[in-house]
Length: 53
Image (cartoon, rainbow, N blue to C red; front, side, top):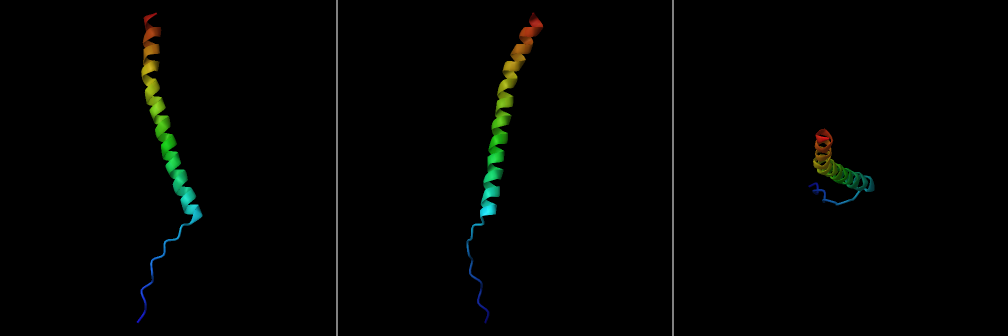
C-alpha cells in the first residue's frame, strides 16, 4: 500500500513578503481614504466661507 503523504507546513519567504506587502498596501489605502474624507468637511467650510465673502 502507498502511504498517504504527510502535511508539511513550510513558509516561503517570498509568499510572506507579498502577503505583508499586500496587507500594508491595504492599510495605507485605508489611511489615505480616511484622510481624504476627514478633510472634505474642512474644505466644504472653506468654500462656504469664500462664497459668503
